[in-house]
Amino acid sequence: MSEQSEASLQLYDAKCKLLLKEPEIRFAGIISKDGSLVLGGFKEGIVPYENDETKLQAFYNFVSKASIRKDFDESLGPINYIAARRDKAVLVSFPFPVSQIALLISAEPNLNIENLAQKVVQIFTDVK
Image 1 (tube, helix red, strand yellow):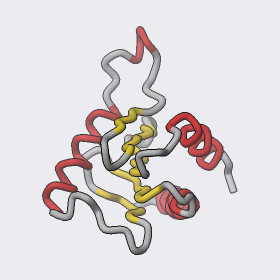
Image 2: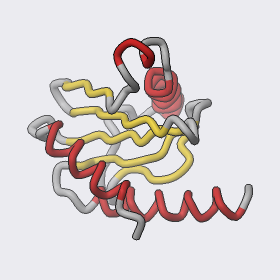
Image 3: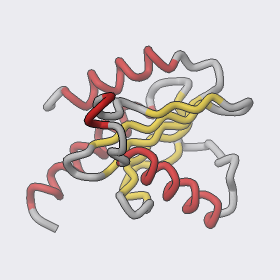
Image 4: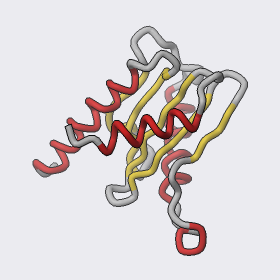
């Protein structure tokens, strides 16, 4: 891994940890294009709803593929985020197309998705 990508990963890790300080957020992690969890994870003390590692890996893979697709980028513009509201959780993924990774967030079902999107943009565009 190059110094640039190592530095980027450390920065992303710090930003995921910052997101995990939000009370509604259960999980914040970076998923690679092959669906592997690169960094981040569940907030301390949180038990995943999908407690089977194989199910989690399959879900990460699904999120990765959906987030980096470019099928309609030319006509509709790039994906800003993909959100799914379920009974037990809100799932939101934010693609980073240049590096072909995605930020995945799982949060409590009462989360305001637009407010989260604004916070993620603010945190991930801040170079500190």
